[in-house]
Image (cartoon, rainbow, N blue to C red):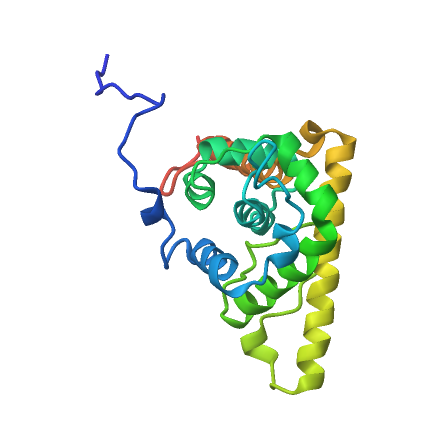
Length: 228
């Protein structure tokens, strides 16, 4: 019987510099999101919601929460429990949140209480990233939400067209936030990772077709073989 080198699929402790995980290239959207939230968005309205500078428990930084939520939306994660798990297991989320690890309760509360303030910021991020070509077919692939096609392909630069695009992206942001809150109300586990489930189902079907093809191929006579 053949012997193979052992494999370990359990946890492995590795030294990781979180800031080095958010870089241009493979994680271009996360890099752009991190920069925009920290340097280009006016978050005064979010900051104004917290009055705990002298008394009360410390709060999660709304910048961190906004980054987490928008990165989750870009990957089709729309339940607070799914986002919580990503913050515990996915290096992009761990890095962009500086390992804050908010609970699903905190995430749901953030979206429910501050959706009015979040939506215009979300739309602004969408507009900027879309203009840079950072939103592809695998990003924001959420059922029931249709984003405008890429800005670089269709934008003429007129004020009317830019306003039209902004309105469409604003509506998309509103729909995604509403879907998030709806999934939290239904019970997070019901729609934990619909994209992953769909991919698994597609893999199962393709594997079954491959097995059927191989089985039928073995039953056919090979080239050059004559029947008795």
